[in-house]
Every structure is written in structure tokens, then in C-alpha cells.
Length: 218
Ligand code: DC
Image 1 (tube, rainbow, N blue to C red):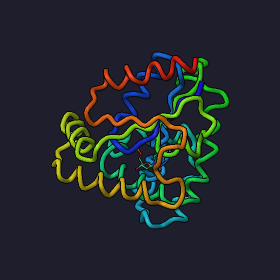
Image 2 (tube, rainbow, N blue to C red):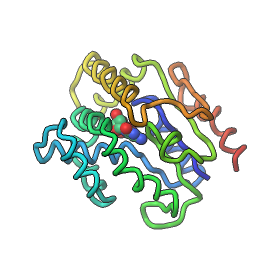
Image 3 (cartoon, helix red, strand yellow):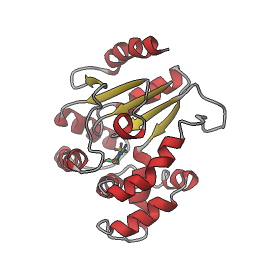
């Protein structure tokens, strides 16, 4: 069983994917991590994000263990990491270099401790369109920009990161713009994706809608 969950930032993809991965024993691949790892590595070595060749070199050499190591850095999920990931993910060569690593995950899905999983849940922007077009179920989760910025702002405050709603909203608009308008694998629903707008739904309502879709595929 392969499920893809695509959509813009803070639409609810992570919460949905995490729940489904536990309920159906699916290995969870948050594909944003590969772009965050490359982007953060660029920042850490002081490389300009506009240096496509440098980003490509890092992407070509990126390994799972290196990605996991970078993922515990404080800026991996901060606005610095988000911005860097969004900028380097525009480069088609970087995307191509990171493609196989993401696709191969579905060949032998295992949990972090090595135990076999019943399948994979991919979370990202292009997992239903590019990474795994053969997925059993494709979800496209979205919400209004204002609602997503409100959620992200609340998350930042809970983590003790001081920022304003306006800054989070402005960053989100800029990131959406880059993610949706890049030439390679722009953010858009696959033709056969189920589109879910979570703007006015709580997580229980979203899951009540999705679970029957998953059960129908089992
Ligand atoms: O899901 P996220 O916020 O961690 O993603 C960070 C950035 O990575 C996002 O702005 C665009 C890029 N990304 C992508 O281009 N394709 C994916 N499948 C996942 C993320």
C-alpha cells in the first residue's frame, strides 16, 4: 500500500501522515526533509543559495544518515531552513539528483528500527505526481493561506520561536509562490488525487473523511 499526501506548508499533511502511518503500519517518508537537508547544508557551509552547482553537488552526495543528522539542527525546521529548502528545490537538476533516493524508499519499506512496514506514506509536494504516480491513494491537502499561517505561527510560539503572524504569512506567500510556479514538479494535485480543504475542519473531521478512503484500498 502506498499513499501520497501532497499540499502546501501547514495544510495538515504531517499530522495526517503521522496518524495514517501508525494506524496502518506504513513507513513514513517526509520528502521535505531531503530539500531541507540540502538547503540547510548550503547555509551551514556559507554557500549562496543561488549557487545551483553547489546545491547539486550536495544533493548528489546526500545520504539518509547525513539527512537524519541535519534534521536535529535547530534551523532544520526554522524559517531559515524552510527558505533554503524552498529556494534549492526550484533547481530541476537538484530534484533529479534526489529522485531515486525518494523512490527507492518504497522498494523495501521499513521503520526506523528496521522492522518491515505494510507500505509507505509519502508526504511532500510532488509525491503523487512525480515520486510515486502509481500510488494506491493520492491525497492533496490544502487550506487557505491565512489559516495555514495562523497554524504555523502558533506552532512557532509553542516552540518558543518569537515571530509575528505577518512575517509567517509573508514567508508562506513567498514559499507558495516558488513551490507552485517552478518549472520542475510544481505543487499541484495529481489528476487522480482526492482534494481536501482543511481550512474549516479539525483533525478528527479530516481523518473521518480519509479513513474510509484508505479502508477502501485495503
Ligand atoms: O514540506 P516542507 O515544508 O518540509 O518542505 C520544504 C520545502 O521543500 C518546500 O517549500 C518545497 C520543497 N519540497 C519540494 O519541492 N518537494 C517535496 N516533495 C517536498 C518539499
